[in-house]
Length: 313
Ligand code: ADP
Ligand code: MG
Image 1 (tube, protein in one colour):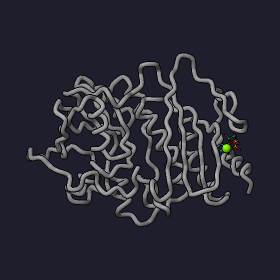
Image 2 (cartoon, helix red, strand yellow):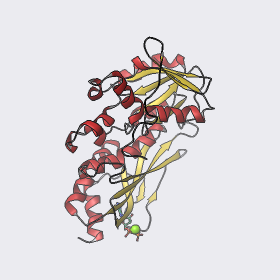
Image 3 (cartoon, helix red, strand yellow):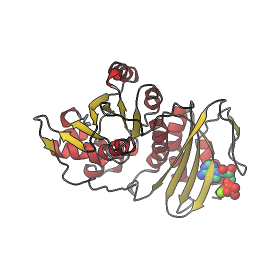
Image 4 (cartoon, protein in one colour):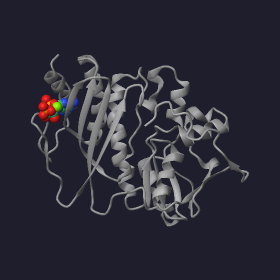
């Protein structure tokens, strides 16, 4: 199969066409027309086989996740996704594998109306780099910096499932949360007028909350362990094992955000309208440490800092 029929195969599967794409794939560059008055948010993430996903991951899941992790970054910025490009390095020209990969990628492209506007295809170790572009209103992007002492801390969804699957599910097709994370695109856009800061949880809740606190001015936090929303897999484990997975395993792509206590009602309303849990897990403090508080009021310390990341960033 030639490089060009491989590229055609990708575009056959990923068939979203948008009017703001003046010139799509096929020339030396794509030409794109942003809406008048909007700013562009742009992000890139690379997935390397054996490092960011297990080697036995199905092609469909790899394609899905390559787009999911990038849409998650746009979500965490409050951006509306529009365009993506795909740089793909593969060890051999395998049309069957590539069609499955592209079908997985197309699931989210179609869901979010995102057009694949071009890319690059090379021969080499399996690695996927996606660049995603979205729109934000000027001054309305949702940054990591912006949290203040006294703000509430929230997390979307239920946590710990991806880390649980990586450690406890040997069959790749059982790793649903790990392979098919849901980027919280609608939530991110809705949070623009509600949250003071936001981030997606790719490195683990504690590490990513730590990023918000650090760039917001060396702030700290108090987290109530009993409030953490635990997913079904880890719920069967001991409390300490649950906390480790929920706080440190990562690869979750939920959003962690901060908001003024005056926003509690709108956040509850938003959770209802999205059908998505938005759990208040603690609050931001002026002094720069993160305290994990047990239900008896005593402090808990994670056994291993940062946990044993199988697949690091
Ligand atoms: P160039 O020589 O300019 O790098 P290529 O031969 O790599 O061009 O690509 C030809 C066209 O196919 C370009 O428009 C490019 O954007 C598109 N393309 C290449 N690889 C991919 C891919 N993996 N996904 C989508 N489009 C691709
Ligand atoms: Mg090229």
